[in-house]
Amino acid sequence: MARIHLYVVAAACAVALALAGDPDMLQDVCVADYASPVKLNGFPCKANISADDFFFDGLRSPGNTNNPAGSAVTAANVDKFPGVNTLGVSMARIDYAPGGQNPPHTHPRATEIIFVLEGTLEVGFLTTANRLLSKTVATGDVFVFPRGLVHFQQNRGHGPAAVVAAFNSQLQGTQAIAMTLFGATPPVPTDILAKAFRVGGGEVEHIKANFAPK
Image (cartoon, rainbow, N blue to C red):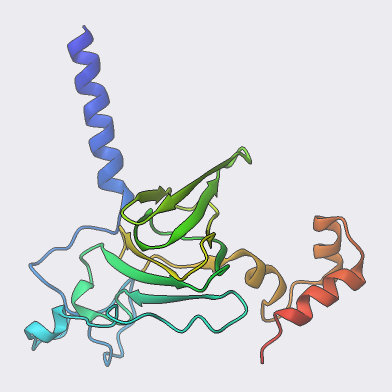
């Protein structure tokens, strides 16, 4: 009986993993055809492909962290890297200035796992029960953020920091919490945000001004 239970658990895990990422591809490769007028869930396949479609050198150099967050995300997803179309994977490089932050955000279509290239970071995510799970990570460490949960990284060292992130989606989607709420177009009504955050409308307008398009 115990062995049967083990098989059931193993089967359930296999099904969960199978459903976790993008849909399975139906051919060897399907390099994204950005020029196609056809619109579908993903990108159509282009006819003529080469090795260059499966190559991307955009993660070699640090990103520009001279911005209010003090961080830069350089993506290697299907928008930048057509060879990953239908493969269900993508990557990113994230660089942080001293004190820099990758602000609280979610990835609706992917789990994220990071490998720390350099520096010391405080990382964490919040469960749907509002529990914070956080840890200080350093060079060589790995941390995973479950799909869809709010998470963040902050450089706690005195020098720059960097990580490589991997996702089980060709286009993980990113929804930054503060920008989504206070920088939306058209804007979220001030009275809705004021009630949600239990503050005055003037405070909401002040925050919105920080996220207004430059």
